[in-house]
Length: 289
Image (cartoon, rainbow, N blue to C red):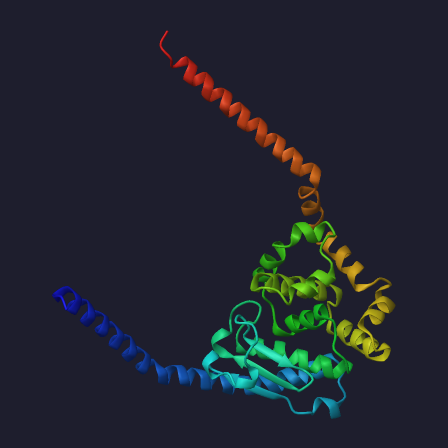
């Protein structure tokens, strides 16, 4: 082996040993942090269950049913029967089983938030299912879960803005939101933001949520309850909501129209023509007589 190769091998070995040493030194700290998260989650679970049971008008005998919460430090500690959910997900709920998984290393990224937010989000899925007695449409399920999880402020608006041109033109239906929840990471985040915004503006107060859940439980249908309360279907209400958003609906609809698009293309063409004429004139003037 050449001297340079020996030096390179020794160097890479030294780096590997250094990395291993750093990992070993930090393992106790990571374990302590994970244990601290588990402790705070247990306290958060009790408060969240109490609030959500009241919000969704769940009878005490149903609310008292146990919920299994599994907390994994990272993906390597996920139990085998939980594996297979999306790589970006920080939590997952199985409402029919009454079970929840939280992966601490994936928390704090939109739309999951910190471990407490993620737990409240997943608890909402389980308790809404118990409140209704049947699965709810994804837009309502995720919208209420995001509402329960807490405020995301600018991140909600950022991911909603990505869909605004199509949404404001009425091309984005609730069926598209539902379908995008099964798509890639970008489309999922956008759907979370839209579902949360629509649910937040449709049910601004806790009393509104409670009354609607009671209607849906009585009618055994979210769609029928929505039509009974608002006089229109959820999809039509969603499209009207998108068109009438406070600061973007009308402007985005106008700016993304076909007429405006062709006007912009024409102006760009005229600008390119003027620039080309000026360049030719300048080149012509620089030629010797």
